[in-house]
Image 1 (tube, rainbow, N blue to C red):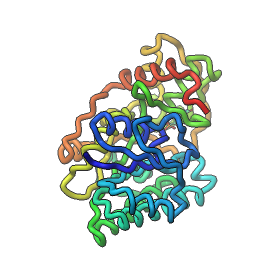
Image 2: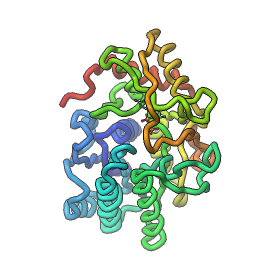
Image 3: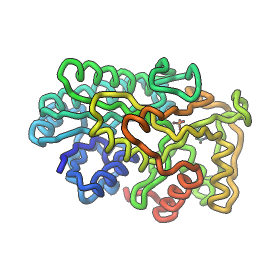
Length: 324
Ligand code: UDP
């Protein structure tokens, strides 16, 4: 049985990925500082270590003693807007603390490293859909911090021989039966729409209807967290290091997501047009042919309706999210 260290396993994507790995029979250790993650999101079948990657000695000890076959690294800060106000927070955690983890991986003789990267490494894309080799010019510190860490992994792989996969998620969305999206404060489109429908918030502020897109709102590629989890598992057995864009390839505008949410729930979304949000590109759509070809990845949730329905079920089951 393979032993996997999952950093950020108490967070949104890390918790769903842990659940997926445990269901497949992997041995999972979650390492999480519980700054944005939730203790209740840690799968009870996993070992749990509460710790911060800033604690270099701790993560060194964990990796030296853990005999891990692989690390999946989700622990990071991930808000574009916040990164524009506090870049040091992003370079400190996503880059400097990431280097502690990479050094610990080498010290612990970990053979495979799967990194949670992002479409934000591309900035304003030169074309859509975006393929792996397109130029990466981030337009915010969040994207830059993730791109820097991709480069760290490239050099660690060359110098120490550690195999890595950088998985660039587009818009992670949806829920499993047990794990869903609970950011505090919430800033993501689909949970905000569903909270508005439930009356938990008064309205959705729709950030910009004057983009150069058919209906004027931003277009994104929403991908279910279980499809992301599947890609992580497949990346463990990739024969060589690589970068992979993960999305469905279907671009949907904010207005289209609102419409789909209304169809899934049978209820109207109250929204107001607001100014553009700084750092938001008009259009981000993935070309995921490489992951389909090289990792044999097949996303199962191709429609926005299926993704939104899973998130809706989770919100109805956990109306207040995870316990504090
Ligand atoms: N969005 C919005 N109102 C909100 C949250 C998001 O209009 O309250 C828009 C946002 O401008 C973007 C899309 O929804 O075009 C997805 O945003 P989200 O924060 O979910 O993900 P991101 O694209 O930033 O990773």
